[in-house]
Amino acid sequence: MSANNEKTAAGAAQTTNFLKNIIEADLAADKFVGRGWAGIAGEASLHAASQPDPAKIRTRFPPEPNGYLHVGHAKSICLNFGLARDFGGVCHMRFDDTNPEKEDQEYVDSILDAIQWLGFSWDANGTSHLFHASNYFDFMYHAAELLIERNLAYVDQQTADEMRANRGTLTEAGKNSPWRDRSAEENLRLFREMRDGKHTEGSMVLRAKVDMASPNINLRDPAIYRIKFDEHHNTGNKWCIYPMYTFAHPIEDALERITHSICTLEFEDQRPFYDWLLAQLRDAGMFADPLPRQIEFARLNLTYVITSKRKLMQLVTEKHVDGWDDPRMPTIVGMRRRGYTPEAIQLFCERIGVSKGDTWIDYSVLEGALRDDLDNKAARAMAVLDPLKLKLTNWDALFGAGHIEPCSAPVHPHHEEMGRRQFNLTPELWIEREDFMEVPPKGYHRLYPGNMSRLKYGYVIKCTGCEKDASGKIETVLAEIVPDTKSGTPGADSVKVKGVITWVSASEGVAAEIRLYDRLFTEAHPDAGGRNFLDALNPNSKRVIQTWVEPSLGSAAPGTSFQFERHGYFVADRKDHGKDGKIIFNRTTTLKDSWGK
Image (tube, rainbow, N blue to C red; front, side):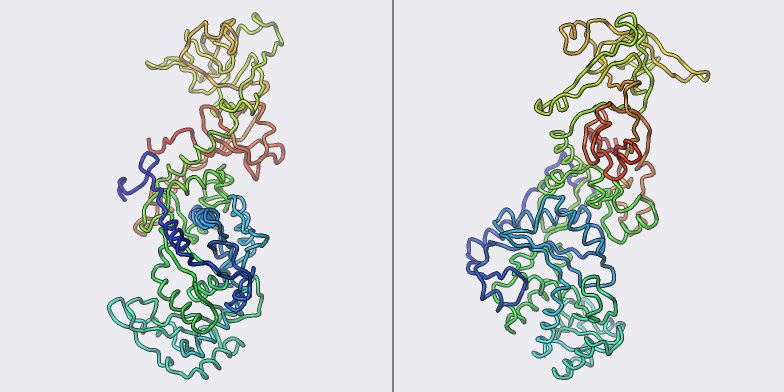
């Protein structure tokens, strides 16, 4: 993928949303006026006897609870809940839990938590719109029997290999199953035997009878029910037959009176069956117009990120990362632990817009939205990541032994209402090792023998030399305070310097563990061309250092974000910060995008 095809922070971000145009046209045409809503999911007769729907539109977010949500799901969440909000509608939270094999309550809980954290709710008009597709199994079974009775579905006893061989190709029509012309009565008897557990897994399936010669292979009599003797996390062992997703999805939408069923592009080829099925069930009296409309949009493709559930699972199970909430993971729980905010994710989704064509979004766009959000809200603090001791040799002569010099700084430089933070200047400090050079290059403005720099929020100091250990490594920088130059006093500008140095008191600073996180992969497209994505893992995606931070950070609550002056944005770790008295911060992002530079 060339750079011209990837959106970068400096490029023109796409902000179009063709879905809004569709919804506006539907509302202008009064397409949904007078539509009934019973407050619960149900068939046409239930909704027809109810009050007019208070929601102008209805969308839905329907994840399968078989994994943790990731940044791609966040786009869909923001889109579906956002459109409902913007158009006076309601977005349903629906668990598409029709597959008993991989679903788990752990994922259900994590999905609900993620959506609420992102700032959205499924409660509206005094009603909860939290639904489970598995609660519709009775409706789906009824729909299947309606199709059988109308000679639009049949029980097929071909093997999976036979069905695959007879399906045809893109250039050749499929072949009818030898069981396709069974009578409705025989199909109904067999289907009920399937329901009652009288047949083994794989021995038969129920197929819709559409068109084996259709150029769209998805219409060549797709399977709509299969036998599966697995316990379901919601319905237990009540069922041993389960609907296929392509059959369940449109029925779920119709039962919930969804107006706009927004899917990613991989479902575009399934739309003809979606429309065919709903039309047949409408004609059978199960549903009524207006039927839901499926609309597809391009999924999120983000550089330096993997969103395949299988590959994310591999990262976790093979311990390439420290769990689903590892701050390097693109999961919402991981991003939250990294220090991403709901507002930053919503801003990112707004900036990239919605399109019908696949494009790649550069990771810098996501980080740019994060910086723009945190810059306005994150409290400031000083931290030293690579500490070197600084000794102020004329301290006692200026102030007297044991003196502590109070200093203060704004919590946020642009928000006076956030107050000021207090800390003390002491005779020994920690500074960044890069802030001293014994023999500096041209243009270096920090500490070197004979040069002056300002201690931020403190005094101007003049470097007088350094102390080394037996091996010649610099252990301590020596400097003298220039009197009457403290920041905020009349003499602060009496001495002009070019270098400003952040610091932490050696006696009052708080020991902290800093986890320096970076991108998990070194390549923009780690699995391009079917290659092993593990080969692109970044060996420096996590570095842990022990260092010092200013005293105000000692009382930081888990999940609180800060800008460490000079270094970037950091967050008190949600899981480990405060345990056993440990102070732990994760780097969320640097102050500027320096990747690859």
